[in-house]
Image 1: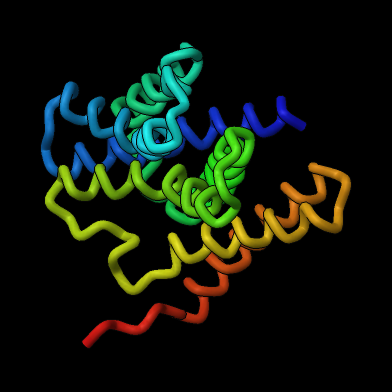
Image 2: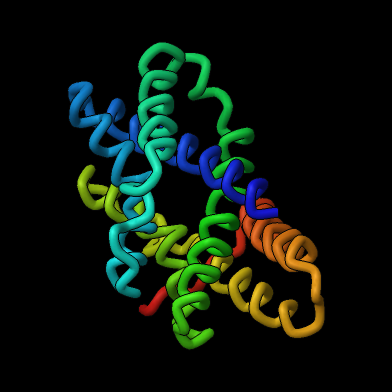
Length: 201
């Protein structure tokens, strides 16, 4: 199970890197700027989480495969951008799976260090969405989680599911599967039915 999560984590890193590189391309950044955006999008959330919970050195520094996944995302964007842009639905699914896995991994890491479950849920959300916040901030866009779209809320709901199911299921694979399905279902239904959180005024 750990190997499966690790593999999906690398795929999520790759997809998030493409997201960052595409954002850089849209802002007419040079290759270094686009690569930097890809990097912070892919590992920004995990880095902030590790710093907050005192897990040092941060995760990606200890595993070269994350850097390879990011560079692969940049290279794919550079050479295949025209083919990638039409795949919005495909990338939506991969992005959603990515935030689900990042939520689970973030929670697991926080819980393993003795963080309170409520804070661990928050750390799962941080893992999943902060990279995108940094990307959007650097490109002068309003971050997605601050708009009226169900995104971070789906991560919180998935984190709660992961925590609660853990009380009744002795099988981690069931817990992980249900959590991923919860986040995917919320994201898909929110987009399909145009659900959104209410504005503040």
